[in-house]
Structure formats: C-alpha cells, structure tokens
Image (tube, rainbow, N blue to C red; front, side, top):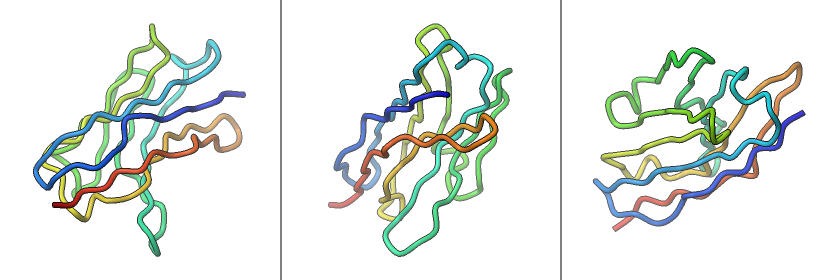
Length: 114
C-alpha cells in the first residue's frame, strides 16, 4: 500500500511554469512505475507523463517538449516540471501508481489564465 500527496499547483499566466511534487509513503517508491494524470472539467482523466523504475519517460504529444517528469528515490518524491503552460493545461493533476490496484493522490489544481 502507498499514499500519494501532491503539491505545487496554483494559478499561472499563459507561458508560465509550475513544478508539481508528489510525496509517496513507504519504502517501495523506487520499485514503482509512476505517472501524472490530469482531469479538466467535463473531460476524462488523461495521462500526461510516465516514468519507469529505471527512469524511462513517456509523454503524449500534447505536452511533449513542455513537461518533464522526474523522480528522486532518496526523497520518495515524484515531480512534474511544466513549462510553456497553456490555458488548455488547466486541470486537476493527479499522481498515480499501480500495485495490483490503482493508487491516486488527492490532486492539485493547476489553472492557466491571464
């Protein structure tokens, strides 16, 4: 079992940057593939970044080149660096992993608006 707690969301102008963090409980973090998802109002939750236990990353075209996922296994923390933010990036962002079942954080709101 693992608990995930996101932080770092907020209001930012178009073109701005934010860094999200996800603190994971327990000692298994380094053995977990991790993801960031987002969900905008009225839309399905979508994957925005993945990182494997060996650091291999994957992004959808909508964020490729703007978002960077990373992890610090010593701190049990997952990050999402978001640059060049657009209004369409506005959503609640969730940290996720799967250990048999899905584990989600509570989410952090990101609003991109002038």
